[in-house]
Length: 390
Ligand SMILES: Cc1cc2nc3c(=O)[nH]c(=O)nc-3n(C[C@H](O)[C@H](O)[C@H](O)COP(=O)(O)OP(=O)(O)OC[C@H]3O[C@@H](n4cnc5c(N)ncnc54)[C@H](O)[C@@H]3O)c2cc1C
Image (cartoon, rainbow, N blue to C red; front, side, top):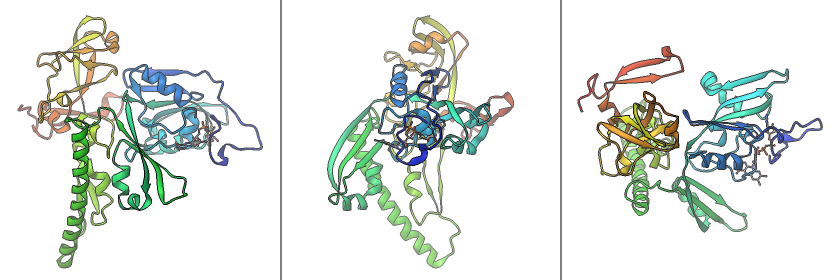
């Protein structure tokens, strides 16, 4: 067992309970992948603080700081936020001791879809001794609390309210037909370029546009069905998959290159993914402590010219662009403690602000499906058809 906070009887037994509270509180960060391996006795408060000191964070947290990582993931403990997976979704690897006494290592890479069940196993597979979790760059959260939301208003606008921010939690004492408190958390700096007011306005416009679109689409599908059979109705756009899929008129949804989670998608509150399209630049100089210069890098995204259109150093974690230099045509200086682990020739991986535009700069994409050279397939980029024109 972990910290014994489960609401139900899952941790109760007339037999012996094995507590991991006294296992060493080990935490090890892989700066190349951003993954952290935490001993099973580690609690979320310890892990979150330890990661923050290293510029990293967890994508979501439950309400209690002192629950154990292993116990929380074993029971699919959730935080809040429409687009935030529960705590177990961050798990990439599990080490456990089976009833026979064997130490077994399980990973998402190796076990694919079955792995989710190995993480949320309620202790049935053995005693978990450590877990490896995916982490994200450190971020701050700003919270506003709204009081006395009528239940009727919640019913009428449920999706708009719970999808209004990175995380929305509802608290009620069930005494009156009200939600006593609505906690709305935004990631600081999460507003799209243009500031918080612009961001809020944009989200309201998006919300009403979606409602209008859903009404029109339903009417159109009804009208077409009156005169012809429809085998499927496709709707989509990566940023609106979460709302389009709820429309009864739609039978399938489509999503585009947003699934690569380019940098601009970090601002979306209704969708979150894992960065999957990266470009690599070699280190060509180490000008001093905490600095590394990489070759090229000035791949700016189109649109409003602001910092959000710059590429973002991603791995190793803990590097940032210089505010006075940005990303250069010939060379790009990168700053941060992680630079000290880099040597000339090492690769730094960066994210583009837009996924499609990355493809205009390179003639090939290398699809990586595993750690071996044979797991890599090269394909022509779809825009340049093998040629980088721009
Ligand atoms: C006040 C309060 C607030 C809460 N808030 C939330 C919330 O916001 N969201 C939410 O989803 N839940 C919440 N919970 C529920 C609770 O946090 C979870 O159920 C979680 O399991 C608690 O973690 P734990 O470390 O205490 O697990 P425990 O209760 O100690 O263990 C639960 C089960 O997990 C398994 N397990 C634990 N450790 C291991 C291990 N090392 N190896 C193998 N199996 C193991 C065992 O089957 C064990 O029986 C809350 C509970 C309380 C009391």
